[in-house]
Image (cartoon, rainbow, N blue to C red):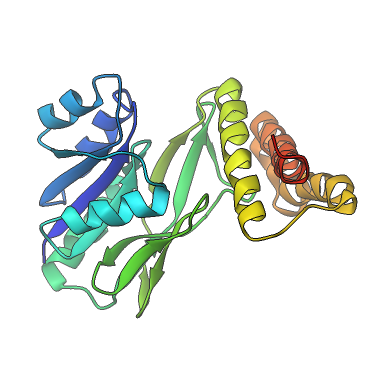
Length: 245
């Protein structure tokens, strides 16, 4: 069993070394870059990755393209701000020795927010299917929240995929603004429009769910910020869908 790691990038020169260096269990690394203006491509090549330049077509489309360029059928798909934990890498090495028992595998994703690992707030375990046989699975999702759809069986691994997201609150605000624009476009494309009731009720519910029901208060100050931004995300998504720019 051989593994191809795939990463899509745009201006990820700072994150990329950490991601690539965690992929010692992989037999090749394929980077699909969409017009980076920093040193992303040079950094990737210097780390031994194969770099392919391609204009941005959307998240799922780009990730499927990356998988299609791989030399091997088993794909390990990471984002540039992610990395394998030691435990997850050991599990993948064991799978290489034994051979797969499923068509794809999921594992928990542990996020680091403002320098703190978040274990509540609805952010953990946040299981993701990222290791899959491309003959049985593909990425789906036109705008945001793309995911791997599997025509077959899915096993579970225990090691964490480490996600180094939003080192600052300002970065969180920027990300929410970008993703709510995409989410609003998705709603419009589906013919959905936000009502005033949603604008009024959904944001406070999002805060309560994250901070209280999902134990965000145990994450301290970061948990409060995450819950607040969850509420803002919902409000901004519905507001942009109702009053498009």
